[in-house]
Image 1 (spheres, rainbow, N blue to C red):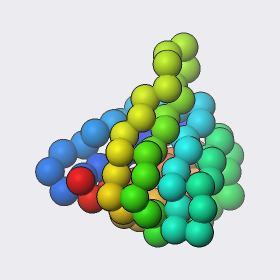
Image 2 (cartoon, rainbow, N blue to C red):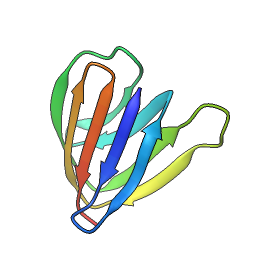
Image 3 (cartoon, rainbow, N blue to C red):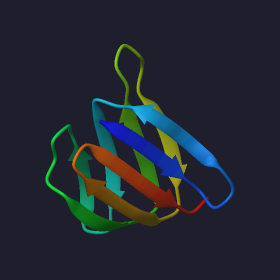
Image 4 (cartoon, helix red, strand yellow):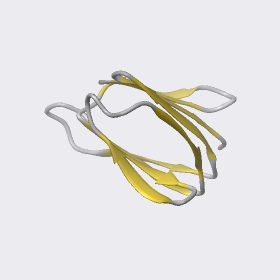
Length: 79
């Protein structure tokens, strides 16, 4: 699935992932390929992105919004 992690200043990550772990307002959730579409508010925490053949990348965030549509995950986050 395609993932974009974007702050107001720059794009932190853009690429293919096999799994994304996100700090949702109501609790942590994971996104895998072919996930049901939804939108969630994010709280402060760490976004974990697993990419094919590489170690997990982690990005601390202070909040934001996640949109999952088909195989596209867009995370608009604060610093």
